[in-house]
Amino acid sequence: GAVVSQHPSWVICKSGTSVKIECRSLDFQATTMFWYRQFPKQSLMLMATSNEGSKATYEQGVEKDKFLINHASLTLSTLTVTSAHPEDSSFYICSALHTREREAFFGQGTRLTVV
Amino acid sequence: AQSVTQLGSHVSVSEGALVLLRCNYSSSVPPYLFWYVQYPNQGLQLLLKYTSAATLVKGINGFEAEFKKSETSFHLTKPSAHMSDAAEYFCAVSGAGSYQLTFGKGTKLSVIP
Image (cartoon, rainbow over all chains, first blue to last red):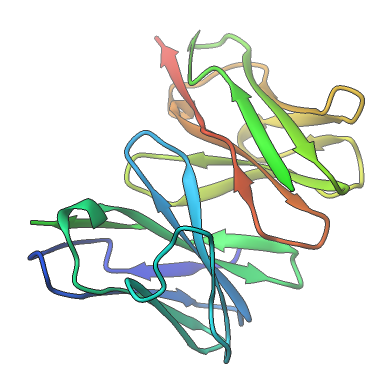
């Protein structure tokens, strides 16, 4: 299957700082990527849909100014958690849509801990 | 709108026993259905998917699932559990052609030696 690389796999940052998470489709172009958040022992919650060259579509209740999404190329989407606080600590997972295979491939996730 | 209900947040089976993980869906449009597996601190790996072709879908690692429209179900089965099957399993639904997934709450599978 296709490969999606997410970086970093884990990060610890201080409260008030910003953290950028990258999601790359390594062997295919992805017009659409998705960002999810997963709390411990819970399901994945869709945060936003990222479309190359246009603004992301955020789900209800997700703060656009808090979670900045950029999809500047067909192989890269980034999620920046701005002014992070301990409550932002979570597992963030991206997926990239492979339209020809009609399947979304997932990155390995990023464990964010804000101290 | 779509939703998924996974019955049982935790299922334990003995090694070699049948694995049955239940998933019921609700969808206002013809659904696509998926089963994913997640190992600790990792992303999701697709086990199998139903996209309106054959109702019995075979996936990787010996798993299969049957789409039953009359029961709005898509249960995941495996005839004989292996220790390596211990993980979290998520059922997900999307509208046909949508690709935006709605996940169930997950079922943690434990395999007892």
